[in-house]
Image (cartoon, rainbow, N blue to C red; front, side, top):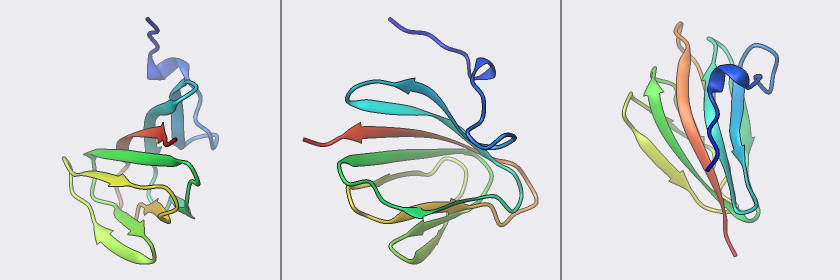
Length: 104
């Protein structure tokens, strides 16, 4: 068993972005906070699917160049090589969880 509290994990980008709670051989995941105007630029993973669950806020989700308006409680899965990103175009902090799963 492993247990960790997000308060003990630093942000990837100083004051926002992802906090990796777990980095294992076949998966990694954690939480992310995006301040107003922050963005996780559109990118893809060669051998990972990624699952997102939006806890707080209504950001834009970018998928293969298209914009999807997300609301609290939405879940999204992207598959290997699908370009994706998240943009906080609101005045509130966005909170989400993510899980990256290695595909064989």
